[in-house]
Image 1: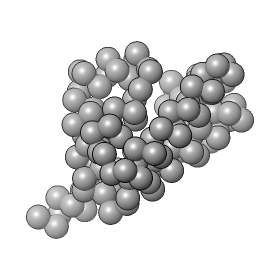
Image 2: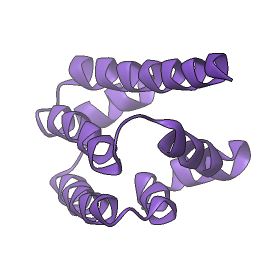
Image 3: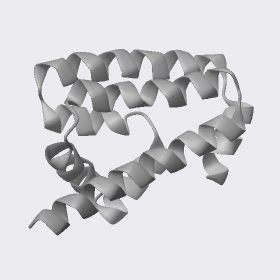
Image 4: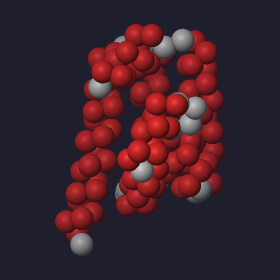
Length: 117
């Protein structure tokens, strides 16, 4: 959560602009139903996330959660709006809470799916 707090406090207008463009692309891809492209955009243009992606196969986890989620890709893409807005407002507390909620919600969906097996 420290990273998102730092981002909220130090994010540049250029980064906000890039994030906004990525969110728009995510929505378009989500409406098309392309899960592979959706997961790629989920971490696009972020070298730290890209390194983590490769180390822990985050792409596979994102793809898996997108497949098992009861939410549509458009709903999943929309969840990023709250994070974007909190970063734009430079509200580190909101951004941190949003990321925490996002991760917890994904974990609950995975656990529910496993329990259903």
